Image (cartoon, rainbow, N blue to C red; front, side, top):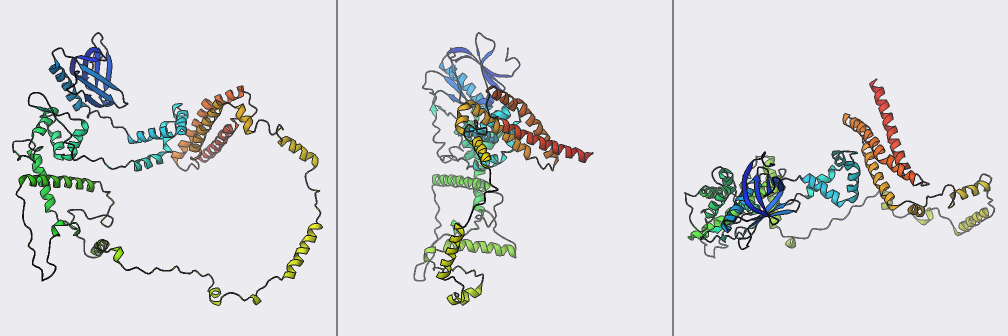
Length: 549
């Protein structure tokens, strides 16, 4: 049987798929379903291909489990244990819990670069056609094809650097438990909910890594979490017997650590905000040192403060490493001290500029006089002396203008053309006949005639081959001058690639065009470009060999 060579983790019988009963096998790397009357698997799914699992609600008559693939397809299995509904739910829960443990281990990590390539091919039909002509036909490799488009990957990565999705504050309230009929509650946890819990409670993630699956199973761990005082610590006191008591103590230590840190920026230091007397005539104002005695309120406030602290830490960790004190705000907990000398002066300048920006109100400040644009004079004497008087300048009178006009008119009337060196009438008529429609030089070259002569499929094929050849020639000509060993090897490789293109693409295209008896060589320009590249390579190769000898 096909399952004999694989590790079988769980076998559940009486499982229907498409109204046919069979057996469901959970193996090391895949889950498979086999028909009762066969010895081969009819359905098989790798754990890496499974995106998510879904279960039917308890109110539904059928006990079902559905696995959804990354490509959008899905398979539904119905559990039909003859012992009753409780046994059917037990079989389904066993499969569900095992999948919860296995799916994160085989979670497929799709490369971001591959996603960018797929998106580029989908958005650009010409690029996709070029990819099929060159890569699919094995003219060049995929690495060579994408090497010249690496800048698109970097631009896409910059654009894709988006903000991390946060966690809703009420995500735990959205987890609505269901009663199991025996004064118990049942929680349906998905991978997104578990990830949200780990983001909100980092200590729970640490405990999960320590306990699962060494000391507790997945379901037992989450059962204890929802039963723990850590989950309900805003309602009851923390018990030392709870395994999550250490998590609560860690949270308290983090809060105390944040309280002990001093805020260096006085603009955001809330501890310095207090009421003071404005004048001696006013009564002195006593400091308000009252503290709340409501334990519930204190616990709730501490939870909010801890959550805000975790959010601020996440924001600080995502700041770029190159950011300096001048370019960003002062972080909580930083000393804010600088060495004597230049460092202290620069820090004080930044602090003064920051305080000035906060305290100054533009609407109440005095208007600064506008500064005019300075003149750029090439010759200062002209600007100082003023315009030149009319009497000192040369100008033409009206009589001079009239006399010049008469002279030009007489010269034009007396001009005689000299056509002895011009083209003879016989040659002119011959050239005109060749360039006229239907002449020797104008046969089949008009756009209208080519449009009717060449079919649309042939035009598309010519266009695709022309684009593919231009792409290959672009790689070839980029190798010159071949100043490095890498460029020399690439030039030799591109010569072989051009020969393969000529053999596999251009020659068959020329044969098909010759069979249609076109009056114009439609593939002649491609042949000329190839011959120019071959001549360049032969010349370069000859010089290279002469230098070696």
